[in-house]
Length: 95
Image (cartoon, rainbow, N blue to C red):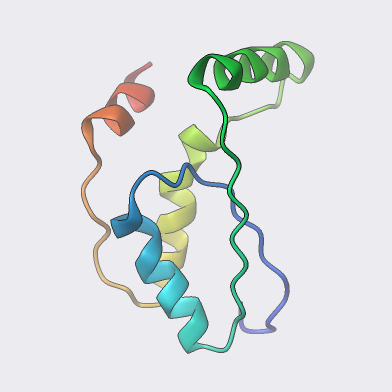
């Protein structure tokens, strides 16, 4: 972050309250933001996930890592506490 290198994060962008503070914080320290949305039907996403898991034993879905990723940025950018997880996030975590 300090050396202003390119950063790519993959998150499920269904909650603006999680990502907006990170975007605003990155803009504040001089980063340019580019958002690329990828939309897919849930069944297609699930099928791609299963295929990835079968083909790569080290594969881990962004659904399992996004909270930790965003937590890092919240700490690094001094954004305070993250919003609490919602019901869907708790279901993913518990499966």
